[in-house]
Amino acid sequence: MIRVTASFSNRREAGGLLGGKLAAAGRWTHPLVLGLPRGGVPVAFEVALELDAPLDVFTVRKLGVPGNEELAFGAIATGGIRVFNREIIEQFHISTHVADEVGDKAERELRWCEQAYRHTSAPPPVQGRQVILVDDGIATGATMQAAVNAVRIAGAAWVVVAVPVAARESVAKLRKQVDRMITLAVPAPFCSVGRFFQDFSPTTDGEVQELLRIAAARP
Image 1: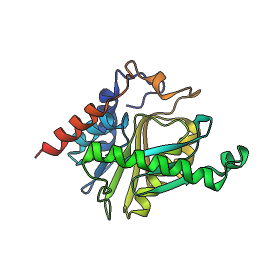
Image 2: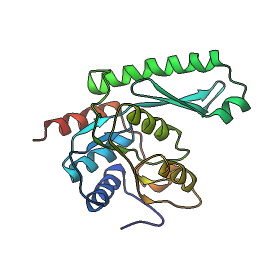
Image 3: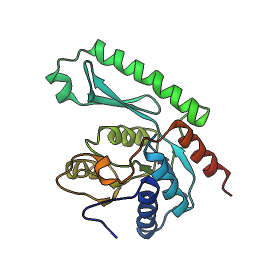
């Protein structure tokens, strides 16, 4: 059931509901579920259980405007794929040198996270696969856009974005870039992802590692 005004207990509950909607959406042929760490992994874990699919992580880092890091001028994803927001770059006069410097730093952090979560910086094997990208929600969509572009370049045959809640404008943009967009709620007005969860406490690296370990141990 689609919730018009979402209020999920936590990420795991939202993931179970999202997985149920995906399971009812049609046939799946060996899908690969990729959670965006950290918050997207508990959601993706439940989706993978519902679909009886393998789970992995797909790491994305936003590129923040120097001095205003919360505002992203782009993002970088597993495989070194970088996506830029040209409007923000021009508005804040970000030079190519600065963009490269910020991107290189983010890429080092990204590789560290992949080693910590997966013990390898090699990207997940998406070639020819049905890939389901999962996060706990979408606000601006820049992070998810980077993930979509990266798995496309890596050869994914079919790309789905699945989230419990998302801003309407971001859904409209992403629908043009993916094969399917699955959401439980697209509320308006949209303030923040955390507003729609009763428990939105930060997911830790340890929780991500444990969920990946449990998923990998499944028959």
